[in-house]
Amino acid sequence: MIKVEGLTKRYARTVAVDNISFEVEKGGIVGFLGPNGAGKTTTMRVLTCFLPPTSGSANVAGFDVLENPLEVKKRIGYLPESPPLYPEMEVQEYLTFVGRLKGISSADVGRRVNEVSERCAVGDVQTKLIGKLSKGYRQRVGLAQAIIHNPEVLILDEPTSGLDPKQIIETRELIRGLAGDHTIILSTHILSEIEHSCDKVIIISHGKLVATDTVANLTNRLRGSEAVALEVDAGLPEAEVRSRLEQVAGVSRVMYKESRDGRHIFEVESLQGRSIRADLARAVVNAGWNLNELRTVGLSLETIFLQLTASESKSATKTAAATPEPGGSH
Amino acid sequence: MKNVWIICQKELKSYFASPIAYLLMAIFAVIFGFFFYSATAFFVMRGMESQMMGRGQPMDVNEWVIRPLLSNASVIALFLIPMITMRLYAEEKRSGTMELLLTSPIRDIEIILGKFIASLIMFSCVIGVSALDLAALFAYGKPDWKPILVGYLGLLLQGGALIAIGTFISTTTKNQIIAGGATFAVCLMLWVLDWVSSYEQAAWAKVVSYLSVVQHFEPFSKGVIDTKDVVFFASMIFFGLFLTARSMESLRWRA
Image (cartoon, each protein chain N blue to C red):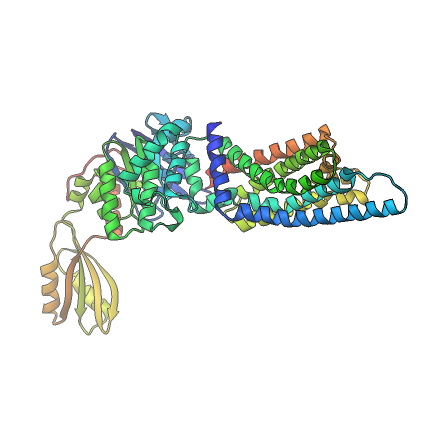
């Protein structure tokens, strides 16, 4: 459905997207994961024909974005990071405008507006001014706008950003419900987002493709490594405590966070497949220090990137070929 | 063509959904009304004077009232056009709706024409207010209506030319104030350019004063349609919209 080959987008001073290739099958939900500034939005903008690529090609639903932009645009629904809304319009008026813009005939547009309003749960605010809507409603109007012409491909740029937890859950369910009819690409910098909604994940960082994999494989790869937050009351300088912690078996990295009233807070990461909590606790107690807190924290996205980039460069599979690596290959 | 109309309709709605349309019409009504009152009062006074002096020559309403009024209207329009064009693209760029337009199956030229036509209609509504005043002249006298129509045609052409330029300026910024201010400066320059011809006869002065919109509007206010003036305004419209199209294109490459 979507085929991207060697896509590069260069701005005046920076390279936003550097030689990315990937493919997306029909009907799936693909997560586009990366920290802010990784090039997610730029890639999406190329796919929606908003930006032309510097080099490489992108093909959506059989049409090239440079050669046949009108055909591509007809088949794409796009929700940018901030929904493109006109505050002075009523919801119904706005959806009608977008529907007409996307090529729906004036006879059908009313029916479609009602359908998508129903689907995105904005039916009750149809006659309200968009400017007066809450953030959650605006996001849903944005989503309704993206699916109004029943596009084959749906591109959503951080669809849940800025929403409250309840709205996030509702939006996720909505997106899940849209899968099947549409091929969906959604971008996010939140890992759990991907786990909840996506079948496949494409990870990029600093404009480069880091990994393409199924969500299940990705979680496998990362399983076994844990991160532990630790608060120690030692009465010693931070460096001494730290060097002691680094000696514990199975510890790969100790990060110093902060100190409060002589208590030090660290974040400790384990090697792949090692459980270090018990050993850490023992080490602290044996040293005669007070262990104030010890809890498992999820691996931060940054850590995951570090791990992935490290493993990728080791195995030298930088290309998009989704070759799932067995877990614990580090 | 259908897409042009969709964009045009949307723009017109947003003009009339906000106070801007009514504000512009009100400003124009008040200022033009004042000029109208002054011109008519002066005309009546002169008319009575010449009758008392015994020189019973009939005075021409077209010559004495309508012609200066149309010239005034063209100058007022100069000041109002920045307010019509400044939001056209700057606002879409700021609020991110540009992304919606540019990712919809619609050509750039259709967006440009739709917006241009909408602002031209908006402008017609503004200057149309003056027709109410002129109607009063028909109620009490017999002015010739043909030069008036030609005058309005001139206003539309001049307005179209300035709107095309304002449209281009609006595509270059996200800030409405900057778009409005720059457009105003350009309009003002195009108005005063022909002043150089009053003290300079060199070739460059002729070229500079040729660019002045006032010089090309003058014949219209007299009821004369001169091809060279029509060509001037038409080419300004084309040039402005051409620059707009280029600017939209560069938006894609830079944004």
